[in-house]
Amino acid sequence: MEGNTAWLLTSAALVLLMTPGLAFFYGGMVRTKSVLNMLMMCFGAIAVVGVLWVIYGYSLTFGDDIGGGLLGDVTQYIGLSGLIGNEDALATTGFVAFQGMFAVITVALIAGAIADRVRFGAWLLFAGIWATIVYFPVAHWVFDFSNDSGHVGGWIANDLVAFDFAGGTAVHINAGAAALALAIIVGKRRGWPREPMKPHNLPFVMLGAAILWFGWFGFNAGSALAANGLAGVAFINTFSATAAAILGWLLIERIRDGHATSLGAASGVVAGLVAITPACAFVDTWGALLIGVLAGVFCALAVGLKYRLGFDDSLDVVGVHLVGGLWGTLAIGMFQTTYVNDTGVSGLFYGGGVGQLGKQAVGAFAVLAYSFVVTAIIAFVIKVTMGWRVTDDEEVTGIDEAEHAESAYEFSGLRSGSSSMSKAADALSGNKVPAKASKEG
Figure 1: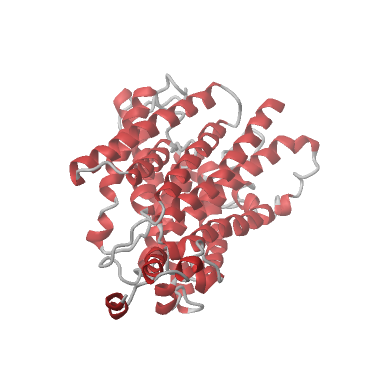
Figure 2 (figure 1 turned 30 degrees about the horizontal axis):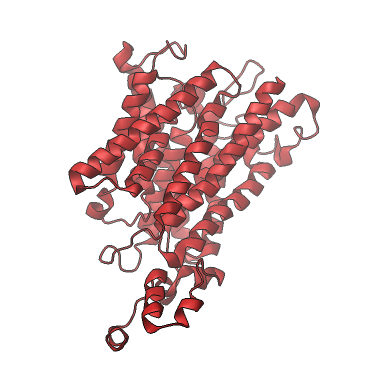
């Protein structure tokens, strides 16, 4: 018991590290004048969701069901009552910590869709409301299992019996659908897609992807809730699928664009991690490799859809998390095998027919629809009350200065030098140099 609790607490710490890793991943992809705001949106999610989780979030998610598998009893563990200081509940507090980190990163993932243009206060308000009425209920549906002690859990896990080992539906489809709704309601960045908005720091992106990959072993292998063989299966499948996804993404880039890029490699890492998350403890090596390489292909193709459909998903949350989450969740119905995990159900390509694939689809699209619709309502209410957007001038000048009175990089030394150095600083910071000034320089 103590060893399992130690593994669960270690996994919780790894999952917490993923959100700062996500901050670097996202922060490197925005322009120089927006990087601090992107980091703050991720850290803001830690703060808001962390507080709500211990007050009532855990109870809403894992309290006894109070109606049709839709919601836990908010009063049962409010303020973690009955868990803190109870010797019999020590293992449960490890689970509380572990699941709390899932709630945090799910909210943080959404931030990438609306980078560069929203007020920090509006984001924090949205984070709290969305966690309360979208994430906590959906996590109850997916992660809360009924048991022999009389506890009744959520409908997807227990009534539908769709499988999701570590969060393809509750985390990635949920966040991806919310990202799509937000991108539509909040609107496009000023100048998108006419102006190039390239990543300002690709080493940050690569570092963030590496931290995410490292933390994801806690995310997936920790979901076994024990230091056992199933955790080992989840671990190796997480590694191999992600490696395959990098190759899949880079292949598409090479064929389509003529180059394999560092941004593509980092994006392939995340696509593979997303897709293998729900399936990591249900598939064998060949299933994991197929899920991974196809995730790289599908997500690399999907990120371009925003230009065709006209929604500004700044950092491709929809293309990677929604598409990757859907693929990984549906892939369980194709590649699941009782050889790896004796659930009594095999996937389509392992002799199990289409029954489980249908259940996976129902669970996936139910979460997608609920998250999209409710997020759109929340986003619209915020838009017509306090408002989402910074002013056009603030967006052009830089959201870091406007919202946080800070800049990620100090260019005063450059500006005090030659005019060419000053213009270089302006270019790096994302500020435009007037044509007249450029000619006179």
